[in-house]
Amino acid sequence: MNKTELKGNWNEQKGKLKKKFAFLTENDLMFEEGKEEEMFGKLQKKMGKTKEELHKIITEL
Image (tube, rainbow, N blue to C red):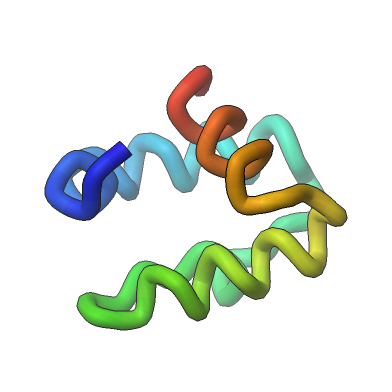
């Protein structure tokens, strides 16, 4: 998944992630231009997933 693809449908993906993983907060999923890696790092830590696993979860939503 590239950054343009992520940015384009992030609100939709964010809603699906919150539905599937109820423990995620709005703050966890806040997308800021240029800080994508920081956001993914926080999600990896909170979810206990690798970067690859996290990207796979998001692309399969």
